[in-house]
Image 1 (cartoon, rainbow, N blue to C red):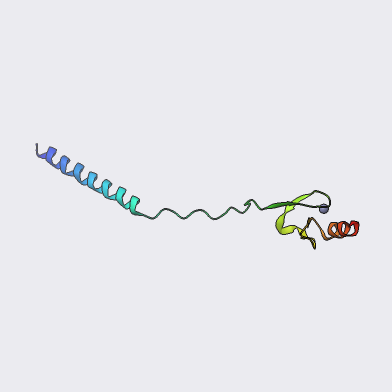
Image 2 (cartoon, rainbow, N blue to C red):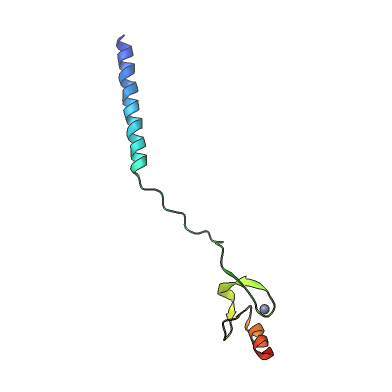
Length: 81
Ligand SMILES: [Zn+2]
């Protein structure tokens, strides 16, 4: 009977410990969102001269806001009129 009492105390102790841990986990702030992956999607634009799709960061802008894949295509398009 004595052992049963010890066992009951141990179970209660474990129960309180687990309850405390759960509340600790719940009160913890959520983890930060992961930083964007290296290969994050970039905005793709289309060359007005040849139709090639390329990242906006690599695009060449024309005087009227057109987008070209290279300075050569911008020049060609501007010469064409
Ligand atoms: Zn082009």
